[in-house]
Figure 1 (cartoon, rainbow, N blue to C red):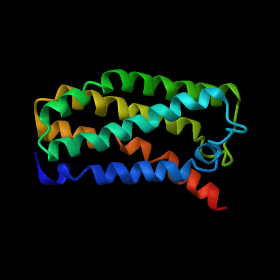
Figure 2: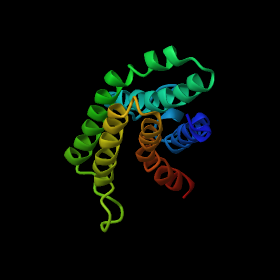
Figure 3: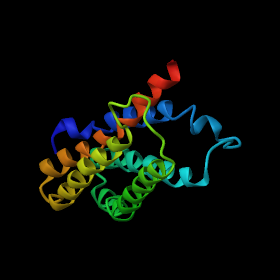
Figure 4: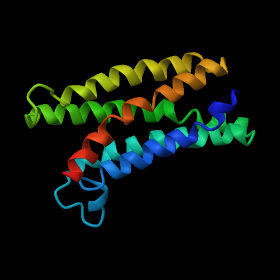
Length: 161
């Protein structure tokens, strides 16, 4: 495996930290009592945290030559990814049902989730397809984290205003 992918866990950690910071005011900061947070929000939160968690573990396992453990952990996404996709679809559906209109009418941010899914799903499927061709597999897995970058900066920006 190329050296750069052995250190990809740093990118995944950065994305996870950005998500935690971005969602601090609206979710993670309310962990004590979850005041104003609907029960439906917990499912996507767990799924969205699970994915970077898996992505962080995998290159560390490879780096430490724990290939069998890497393969074992690599089976977890077969269950997590469908649940992750379902949770995002449920959130998008909920935002349309609630008719939460965007602040800037020129950009409907509810559609960004759909765009992110249309990027994430093919990248993940290609990573699975190329699991025996390490260079492609690693590249597609790295690309699966990109849709998780979108939501956090938008919320960070809202939190600072």
